[in-house]
Length: 123
Image 1 (cartoon, one colour):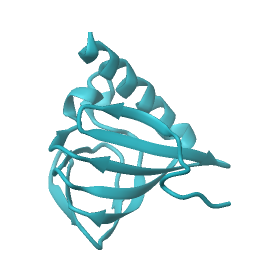
Image 2 (cartoon, rainbow, N blue to C red):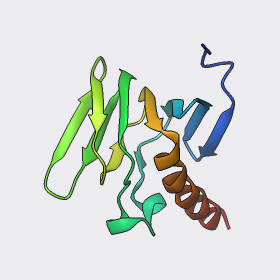
Image 3 (cartoon, rainbow, N blue to C red):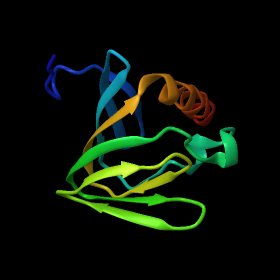
Image 4 (cartoon, one colour):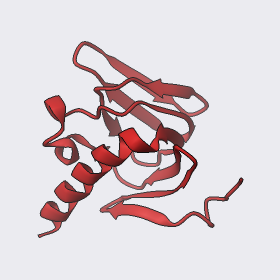
């Protein structure tokens, strides 16, 4: 299986960010772009400890991502491969783009909360 950024459907979009992705077997594959600084904290409200319980693996194509855990922060820069452990939140700098892979079953629960919070913000 393969896909390109232009072929992937937009799965979620907000002010200054877009996620394009698909599910292959049990894995969700996404390309995310951020035109503005982005703090995902308000989108995680309602998840355990308001943090994402889903682990994610990926590659930072450009920009920088701050991944914050209860006890520490990691910074992922352009050219880095990464693993974001469960129970994290991210602050992403404008101009960032990354490829990310997650277990569909785990991430779909977090995405449902994310989308509900996004819809509430749009009202």
